[in-house]
Length: 186
Image 1 (cartoon, rainbow, N blue to C red):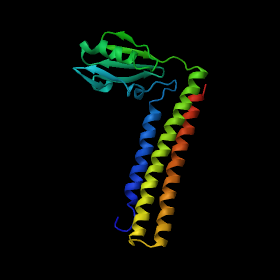
Image 2 (tube, one colour):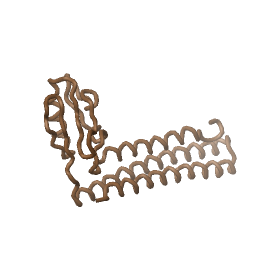
Image 3 (tube, one colour):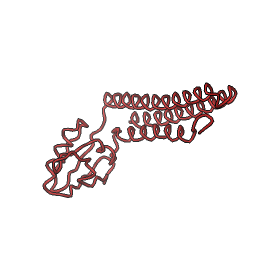
Image 4 (cartoon, one colour):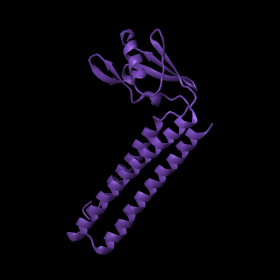
């Protein structure tokens, strides 16, 4: 925007922080099976590290079970190894070209750890939103210094940037509360 800051760009970047936070939360194991739980796993396949969803189909046939159907029979052991070494606490059961991954019950200590991790993800998302706010404010101050906008416009647009930031952080906090409740429910 020639007269201040591009609010569409700021909004897009703040929504990006929220979307990244949603993705991070989806990868947290809450006791319920989800295909997203395996997203961080990389499989050594054909001389390169590939995401598990590029060598197999991940599905959730039951609430506490993840099923992985490997497309290439020669990749079954590599997928099994990648899942075991992922530090996610999974112990797959190999059945031909399929792997079944039962999800054990979460104990209280592990639930508290997951809540701490969720809080870390939330803080990272808040920091990202604040960085976007800082960039917007710097653009506004530069525009005011260069006499592109008046002081009144600076205050109006600064308030708008702050409101966008507050709304983004409120959305992040709301998602965090929901995930925390999901993790801690017995």
